[in-house]
Length: 281
Ligand SMILES: [Zn+2]
Image (cartoon, rainbow, N blue to C red; front, side, top):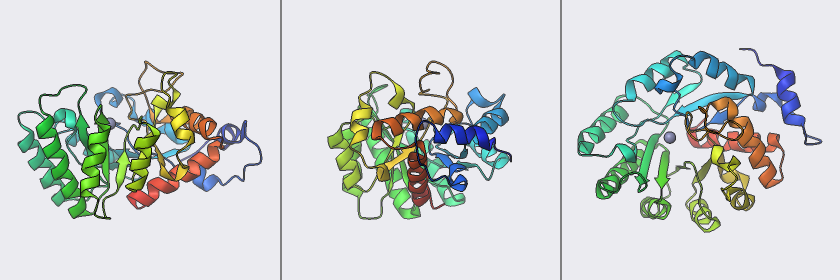
């Protein structure tokens, strides 16, 4: 695989000064949360991955959604085994009448082969509140399976962050680890997450004007952050409104660097180390 090193060099070095460049780690930006198996990418996935590699994004962790996404996710992993890594879980928005069947499938898959994590799981009060009780039950069960298999959990929360934190707290026996994906909370919530030993996933939202995430980010040590796109969703500025893809992590990294007064290189180095530490390489 070839990387246009000079272009990457210019991006990393500018506008920051005095960076000790280590190209090996530059090549390992990790997108910890991306749905590259969805229909939006069926036509040009090769180009999408090539564009990501060209700016140093080298690994893609794929959270599952429900029974309808498993085959496409596993097929993508098969085509790009070095780069695309599958996870297994039931998304809270897919917790409906048939959630017990869906959960059974997740449980069976977790026994059948290794996955990098259990996700995405959690609570979503934004789209539908009809199944909150079932969402909590599904979240709890999947946390237990993650503990059993010694896997990190990938948490989706929408209008439900404190409830998600509370459930993680109740289950934290010193072994539970994972990511609060698409973190957009307050510094108080960030502190609780850090106390739990969890990481926060930062993506395109950080580039939105309305989000006061940059002020919160300033106070969160980089040791608690990982990068994510949630592609094809949550596209960063200047491509907001279009399909998101991992190459756009560049804009997220720049924004985090600006918010924390660090270089892009420092952000990449820390977030890659955090992700490798969580997923085990
Ligand atoms: Zn997602």
